[in-house]
Image 1 (cartoon, rainbow, N blue to C red):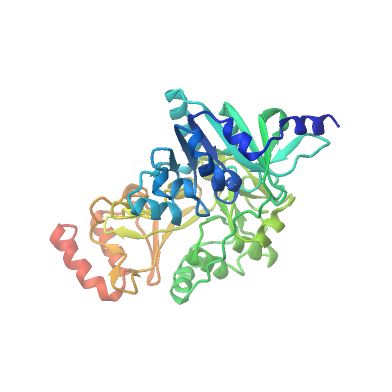
Image 2: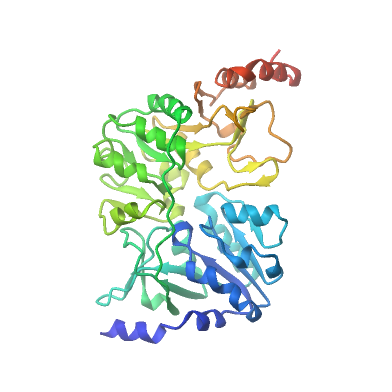
Length: 439
C-alpha cells in the first residue's frame, strides 16, 4: 500500500509535467523502441513555455513536429546519436532543428553526461517504463539500456512515462519509485519494425560469412537484409551464443531451432546478452519476463575489452562503402549524415580482441541498381569513416570474403578488387595504379 500512495503523489498529467521543465534545459529520451512517444509527440504544443529546449534522443522511430517543422527553429533542437528517416529529412531541408552527436555506443552516455555537467545545464531524463510493481515499488525500463540507466543516475530530474504495453525485461533494467520525481501515464504500443527479407545477393553474401563462423562462436549481429540472411545460413551450426548490441528477430528463430544455445559462451553462459531490442510485437512478447535474455548497460555490453573476453567472438555488421585501403563508411553519403556509428566500431574491435574472433564488415558490391561500385578507390570528399583502416579485419561481398588485418595497402587493394563486382574490377585496378597503391 505504501508504494501505491507514493505513486499517486508523483503522478501528474502530461501538460503539468512539461510545464515543470525549465525554460532552458536538456531532456534526454530513451532510445528507439523506448523513445518517449507521449513527450515527443506533444512537446511542440507547449513551445511557448520554452526559451530553448534541447532534446537528446537516438534513432527516432516516428515523425515528431518539434524536430521537423521549421516554425520550431530556435525553440527546440534535437541532438541525436543515430539518425532515422525523420532526422535525415529535417537535416536535408536545412532546418536548424537536428544535429548529430558523433560517438561510439559504449561511450555515448558517459561522454554526453560529462559534456552537459561541464556546461552546468540541468539534465532531465524522460523515458518509458512498465507499470510499477505495487509490492516492491519497482518499474522496468524495458527494451533499451544503451545509456538510459547512466542518465537516470546522473539526472537532476527523472520523469517516467508509464506504459502498460512495455515488456518487463530481465537485467539491469529496474528503477525504484524513490529514484523518480514525476510520473505521467501514456499507453501506446512500442515502435516496431518489420523484418527485412533478404534477396539473392544478401544470401550469397551470407553464405560467405557463414563459412567464417565456427560452432561454439558468440555472435554480434546487426540489422537488415544481410544480417537476416546470415542468420538463415547459420542454421545447422552448433552451440552458438549471443552477446550483441541489438537483439533481433532472427535470434528467436535460431534459438527455437537449436542453433543458438548460449551454453558455450565465456561470459554469461546460458543467457542472451544485449543492450537494446527492436523488432515486432511478437519479439516483445517473447522477451517479456524471459529469464534467458539480459539487457545490460551499453557501456558494458559494447565495451571492446568486455566483448573480447568471449572466445570465438564474431561481429557481423554492414557498410555503405569501403575504399581500397580499408576505410569503411557505414553512416554517411559523402558529408551527409545518414545514420550513425552506433556500436559498429565497438564490436568490430572487440571481436578482434577475442581468442579466435573475427570482425566482419558486409556489403553489396554495388548500389543504385548496379550503377556504382561500393568498393571505391577513395571515399568521396567529406565522407565520415566509421571503421578506420587500421581496425578493419574481414570484408565480405557476394563475390567472397577477404581478411585485411595486417595487410599492406597493395595487398588490401588486390584483395578488395577481387571481391568487387566484376564490371568494376578493371576500373578499380587502373585507379589503384594511378594513385600509387599498385605498381
